[in-house]
Length: 588
Ligand code: SF4
Image 1 (cartoon, protein in one colour):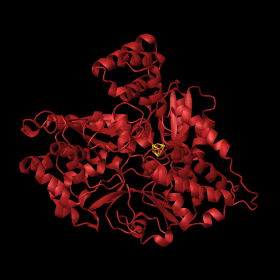
Image 2 (cartoon, protein in one colour):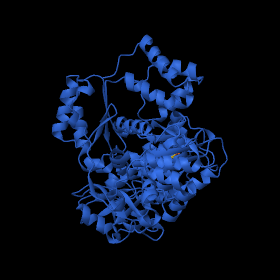
Image 3 (cartoon, protein in one colour):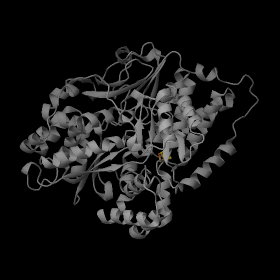
Image 4 (cartoon, protein in one colour):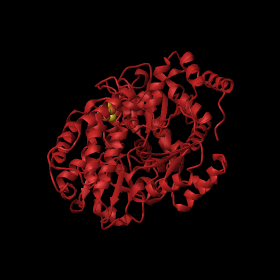
């Protein structure tokens, strides 16, 4: 339970916080998260003090708060967010949410809402209560939560098993079968030199595991070659793509390898400063990650003169996100690390040239750093013996949805979809969604296709839809997700996501007409061509796939009569203008 807020104790707490971090305004978001963690909301007194001490107008601080879904100005004793990912919906999350609402109608200070994917799709349905994740929800668990809230039991006294998160790893290939000992990769890199390490990475063919697949060695080299007083390493642990949870499993089972990979990168590019940007939904991993950092400092693997090498100084700070999917985009993530709203930056310059606080910065995914550690120890040849064509090695896949064995699987690139479906107990399936809501919707007659950069690239999500599913439900869920997560910066995405969602609702309710179908196609095309960042450009992918490959699901939902235009453009755009005002976007 949070502490009650009064001017005196809020002032003391905020002053201490600011003092501890030398009034560093780049930590604004972290200050807000800590203040909310203490009081359950962001009191006026705290914002006034932050504004004074950090010399930021109060309105600017409010604008940062309004950008992040998990920051609140209104007190609530319990804030409960149900994961609204499609796989949670398929497991009955809407009914469970209603049961909780019904059970708590007379309870005061309880806020119940939905949020995007919480990263527990292998143990859904899931929710967050005051930022803490609870999975495997069923009627009994919901009734237990109702009872705890009605009796006003503080969260820290709730039964620990409610918050237990397990890691279901069903298939280990060469990378997961190998246990990397802390320090082994670093010792080799110090022995043989940064040039050797870069050469190994280059020869291995490792590409970024976040989805875009940029060659890792090239990124590190570009950053290393940019002259600057310092360089920065950032681990993107903002795993927000619906259906993806393999980074959660890596961080909870082998954080040493991830941090060692970051330290290898620091050695190559000459960085002293590193960050792990951890999504708010994975806050439960924070104590464990902090303890790994402490252990590594004690073992001489982080901090000053790493492994006795004078001048090799590198340390890592963990920053939390606050519920904004767009912060998974690397330039938006850097904005958020600097304490601002996570709006993607204009590029070029790219982060490797001008990143965190203007310094050349490498941003890589959790799995990329984890793999770099293995490549340093086992070598490029070992790594690339697995894989296909332009896609070397193995990668981790998060499997969820209609299958009997959801969890994490490691496969060589080039593995066919039907192989994965057999392994996870997902056959026969109607379709699978590769790479989260922004990826490809693959129908059953294409299950011979392969996961690889050449065929179906993926950030690691694999959602299975069984024969009983209505794919229109799936598409409408994706449309709602993008409408919520669009940062509102550019017109085509801000308006496009809202219009697509409105049209999809019409299809779902059987009131769409042919004009809607045509408008949907043209809006999707516009978004792909003119959105500012990857979110807007990739949001149409699943809809375009469905229109091309599964047109019957749209045709079957058209209204029987078509009396001309039935979509209210004015209403949709006026709602979008409201959003623009609300988010204070500066670019239309
Ligand atoms: Fe924001 Fe535009 Fe990117 Fe959409 S495409 S998330 S509105 S910058």
